Length: 396
Image (cartoon, rainbow, N blue to C red; front, side, top):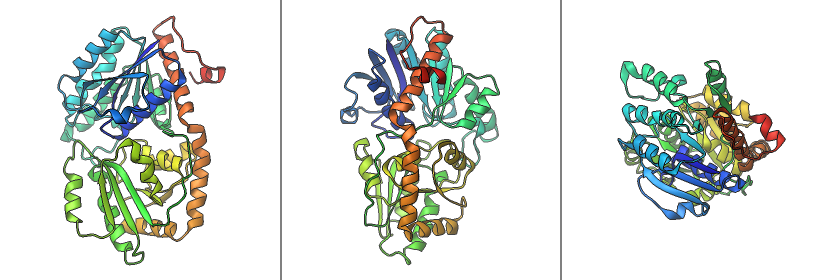
């Protein structure tokens, strides 16, 4: 059976692209498919990111910002004529303009109309987001555009979502969907905690990610913890390409801040190994956080703003988070101080989250996808099926 995967992909290490890479690896490891082709969305090819995908063909046939990405993807799908197509998308997968993303989000619907069983994973539902807090383009028309984008993006045989309340919302509107949490990208491992007091901020850089709030809190805490370090890592957001650079210039004289920029996939484990505390100071949310799952995977304690999305995510997955009041620098400082002063609290949280992440290992996530794929095959009345266990069939 031939599976085609359409996803942002390395070398651009965005949250959705990183998810696409690791899930491709997990699905390949199931042995359920004789052939997997990734129609990869990236601007450049770098083979060393793909050293765990030896049996999967990577076809860089489109990239974000490309005006004809939809046509390029559909042409390749028709040429390959697969048994299944899985699309892995965020709301801005196709570029920074609303037009490009609306155009691109028609791709699953058109693939389905062409007769291919089609599965879409959506990492965010823009119809449910705070568009003002996210600085979303479109002005007064932004809410209309968000509803339209959501409507178009969910025109697939099966829609997979990474937060349970997204499933509840779409199911009430007649969409056939499944809840599949992001889960761990690697086999969980509690890494030894470093001696250095080091905070980690790892994300795609945008104003709503709370970097300025963290920098303020860090500066205030330095008088109390002179050996405290802050590592800032991640890629530029396509809508805010100069944001991190401008902040770096502003805080260039600050001591003990390391600006890493984009981190290669093979270096992510080392990034978490050097951290004591992972901080998610977001002032607005676009859905589930892969960084939270990675912190749980590697045994790192987490501080996060008390946004509804973060609290839902913690409840849905039994993940222990030290919450602070969103947008409040003093509250963030208090939370960081509490964890810095309590190795026992850090250890307790890390061990609790390590237990929770066990049921969200890569093999479990890939089995959920096999169930979703079978559901799509049945809906399209395909005679083909993927062999799964009875337990997995119940998920479908």
